[in-house]
Length: 181
Image (tube, rainbow, N blue to C red):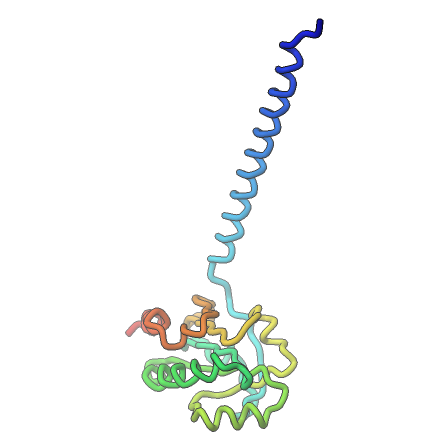
């Protein structure tokens, strides 16, 4: 007659060990995810770049150290960009005297198309051409519009991927706080 106690205890013990291992693995995964989120939440220095402007020659991000800088990544084929850019232009007009710099970073390959788009929208801020996508990759742009807010020390403080961010109170509050107004 088989020992029923041993046949029932071993599977139970194995299940208990398996549950403990899964629980431990789950806790490790949670701890690692928290660490990754903490690293992502840490402000980091904005990568420097130089791009050709449609109107003003080459522009280098580091030249604007001491100002609050908003990078607006966009393309002429992007409907959400068409809606967001005029709102960013208004934001720029209201705060440029306080030290706000707005740089539009266009992803089109055709500079004339970007120039016409900017003309139609009457953009007052520089439009920089990133046709080969080097700067877009530096800033991990996966969709447009993308708005990156950089403080006076050159540290990225906020990133917005929502098409509604350009006209949001949140963006205005972030910028005003960084401007110190």
